[in-house]
Length: 343
Image 1: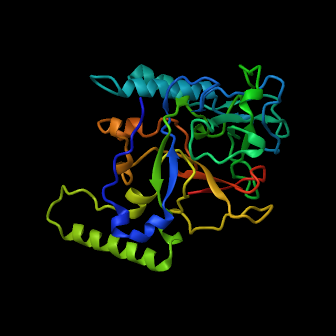
Image 2: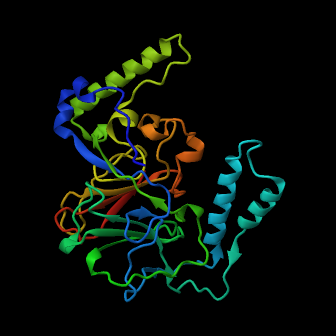
Image 3: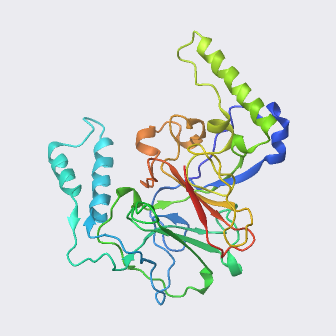
């Protein structure tokens, strides 16, 4: 079933005609639970990885001997999902609660040295044929594959994340690896995705407000303040929250490809290629939620009646403190190193 973004609450270009100059497109991926295969674009599904090519590994020295087992994480999620969907008396039973506690336990892997290579988790793969806004890969590559380490143990702080992006020509893969290596334990449940099929949808998008010309940004701010003041003075307690540029009109929530990055947690930071200084483009956004209380106007038409707490987190991926990971690529030389920002 396709997913369709509702029309925006109002025509933002009618209010601010200058925005037409800055209009772009982004492809909402709309990941939803399913059983993708290696020939499909997916999150958490099997990857089109050749049998004769080594699986990506984390080679940075760090402790990875203690954590939760991925199979236990998947099982725990299944139990909770079934428990809360029961028609009568929803929620886990006493017996299920005991099992959930057992599945939540951490385990130690004997003889796992900090210098041992650690298999990365295959997070997602995107075929250009499926995703209109996916930037071109190097050397005619048509498939982007995303991996990350399941431990926060990298970078100068020793608590950062590590991800690895690979481009390939899908037609060159003749024998697919069906049982790739996997980490025995992970440091954080949010690094373990649930298998999801994608329902790509291209929608209009506009830049983050503070990146617009100063006078235009000021007019948008004044308009929002007037709406908020009007809502505060209203006697209707059931009235919907006022429309906002950030939450309703510019950048959609959820997993998406292309368009503009949100900078709602930090001030905007220049993202220039560290190799050639070219301004980088947003390649992919990995989000902890497909929508929330502030961005509910983006909830697909086909899912309007579904409760948010059970349906807005299909991938079960969590970035940072319930944020989003924006990955940037060099449009001039796609093989140059990527950059990223957590918001």
